[in-house]
Length: 324
Image 1 (cartoon, rainbow, N blue to C red):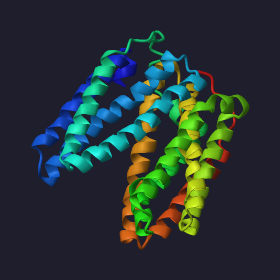
Image 2 (tube, rainbow, N blue to C red):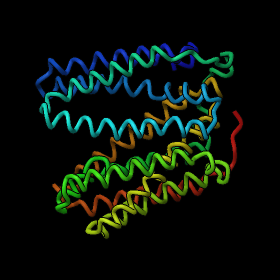
Image 3 (cartoon, rainbow, N blue to C red):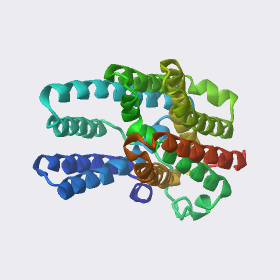
Image 4 (cartoon, one colour):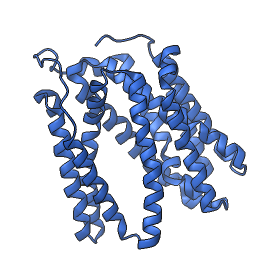
């Protein structure tokens, strides 16, 4: 809201990055459960708050080009791979205590990078464009999109939280587990590269339905073929649809659905609701179902059902473009 009202999203990004850094750094002096939880909650408050502004800044800088956005976004996936490898090696050599230092270093670099960003020219902030966005939120097309996305993120909980443990319990080696998970990230990078062509030939609704539907299929198949490295690898290739195609299409949807002066609020509601609420509910439910691995298959089946329901809801959505 501050970013939209003031028309200075870059200042919000820089302030949020700095406060996230300070919040995380307090972990050096935190030892108890509640103090650590408070620090991480405070860090997440500021870090999550700047994500929508970064998306808006990127899309505005690129003049809302879906093709170029996907090419920029793939660097996040590459960074994830590099950091996962470096962090693993660092903590193996120096111990888990190095976790806080790794986080602080990354956040310092994040803050410094925000200082290098240049303001982008925004639309004039008149009273109409900056007014309430309730009508956009109550639009049936957005409700279907939001609900389907929430169900999709809810379904990711077993994968994000327990997939590595699941493979470990099936006696896969640590190297194999790492390679299987990395394959999914590689697949999403390839998808980001070719997103421009997909946007050219397919509608947003088609891409969203496809990505959520493929995700449902992935979760249903995992319990059935988990003893096969070949099948697990094929399933991981589906991450190109589950994340890269869905994320690119959803960013395009938000960009089209909300006016330029509503982008920060639209992104904030979407990311906070879909990823925040959906991820939290999914983690909570999966925590009950998992039962130290005994309920793993049931967890993935519930996840598949959640994504499948999201697919049907997205199918019901109106297939039309909304003027900005």
